[in-house]
Each structure stands twice: as C-alpha cells, then as structure tokens.
Amino acid sequence: MENESEKKFFRLKHIIPRNLSAASVSASAIQPVNKQTASVNAPEEFVFKMTYGNVAAKIWGPPDGHPVFAIHGWLDNAGSFDALIPLLPPNLRIVAVDTAGHGFSDPFPPDIAYNFIDSALAIERLARHFKWEKFSIIGHSLGGAMGMLFAGTFPEKVDKLVCLDVVRVIPTKTETIDLRLRKAVNKLLKLENAILAGPEKPMSYEVAVDKCVTGTFGSLDKKACDILFKRGLRKVAEDGYVFSRDRRLLAAPLSFIAKEHQLFLAHKVTADVLVIKFSEGPYFEAPEDYEEHIEALKTKSKRVQYVQVEGMHHTHLTKPASVAPIISDFFKGL
Image (cartoon, rainbow, N blue to C red; front, side):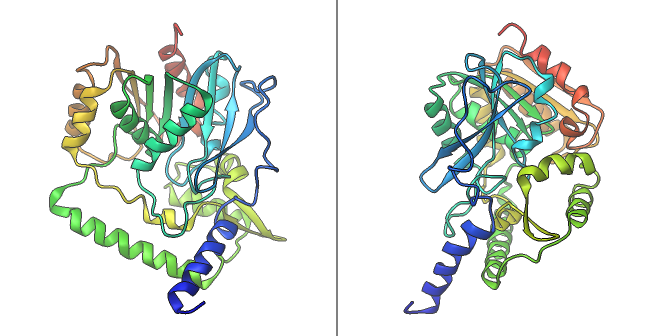
C-alpha cells in the first residue's frame, strides 16, 4: 500500500462485496434452477455469472412456458413479485431478478457507479443465457422504466411490456442537469466515506421494518417487509440486521436521459404495453407528460393500455389480487 488512494481502493474492494451485499450467499449456496421442479408455487433459485460477479434470480413456472423477466424497483428485490406471480397464468416462465447490488446479487465493483443503461446490458445477457429470442417484461417502478428503455432499444425482442406504477425514467431537464450531477457525485462520495468508515450499525428486525414502512410512506406494510427481507436483510449479530443492498444505491442511479430521447424510443416500441398506475403512488411527472409518452407508444404498438388501480406504490405486493386479473387478461392468448 504505497499511498492513501491505494489503501482506500483496497478497503472498498474488500468491504463492498463482503459487507454490503448478499454476495456471501455464493453460487455453491444457491444452486442453479432445477428445470423439472420450478413451478408457479415453488420457485427455484438461480445464479448467473456476470463479468463483475453473480446475479441472483427466482424462476417460476414450467421450462416450456412463455418467457418473462420480472424486474423490481429501486432498493427492492426479486421478492417484490412473490405475492403476485402465483396469481398469474401458470403457463408463464418468469425469471424474477435481483438487479445488481440488490437482494442476493453482487454489487458493482467499487469504482463503477450504477445507472439505467446497465439494465439493457444485463437483460440482454440473461436473454442470451436462456436462449430467449423473444420475451415479455414485467417491471415495477424503476424496473418498469428499465423495461421501457429496453423495449425501445430492442423492439424485436419484447412482445409484451407491463409497467407497474411507472411510465418511463424521470426525464433529465437541460436546465438542471448540472445540479443533478453535482448532487449525485457529492452523495456518492459521502456514501463512499461512510463505507470506508466501516460496516453499518446493526439494527433490530423491528427497526428495519419501521425504516421501510416510514421510508415508503406506508406503501410497504409489515407483511410486505417480511417478504422483501428474505433477500433484503442480513443477520450480522444475535439480534442485529443490516440491509443487504449496496449502500451506494442510496445515491440513486447516475443516469441522464432527456424526454426527447425517451419519446424517440417510445416510437420504436412494437410490444403490447400495459401501464398500471396506482392511484396513491408517486407521480414523477405531470399527467400530460405521461399522456404524451403513451401516445408515442401507439405509433407502432398495436395494443397500449393505461389502467388506474386504487392503492399505493407497492400495491402489486400488498394487494396483488387487485392487479393480477388485469395482467392475466393482458397475457391471454399466448
């Protein structure tokens, strides 16, 4: 260790993989899916090796079922779909992924920041692994925004897209791009310093629940937390837990995508699109901006549905029965 920079890099390299993610649940601990036993009621764990580490997933449904990727939202994990998937048609082969730095998946290396564009690469890698030439995507929140970007970039590969409580990535405004980048850089450096200072202070299970319930303004309840915590919480002491996600994710992904660019991609989408907006969920843009994007989707997509459902941001997890029939009808005829 010749200088302080090398010391910091060494600490980041070793602290992040071991203390910030569930990467300690190795490929030997999570076995590849058993194609004969995975079902809509009994999902199997799967680990896929990426260039930087492992991506973990839960696979539901028969091997010959219609291929579907399920992508969770920011700071959630693949458990986000545990309550919904059993209510969907049994002929779907659903791969619910823990995105990088979430759940059981490894974080990015210490010198690589998270951004939306990485999702396209990850989805395409997984699709090639499973030899899926055409597939569907169900995404919640950030996962839905990722799906929208992918469907516009690779329109020939996506046949159906379901976006839960989101329409697209929050567009970047030219007049505020410098402020957003400045804020993101400062937040990342602050989180990096916290990581260098050592592991997070363990908390009780009850405190973890309270943090998630209050942090989502009541969108998550105790039952939903119990589901997410199976992959999202790690026990590090007799009565102490830490969240398994990479702390750097708290800075939010570093991505800057203008509205014009997203509208251009929306014009390219050929998949059938279903957007389910939860009435009490966040509105990241004005209604007319959502409508503009929906209209752009109709350029090439033969079926575009926008449905509003009563509930908060995680309604698909807390009240899946209010969402499942709409999605099931959308997948009819496969």
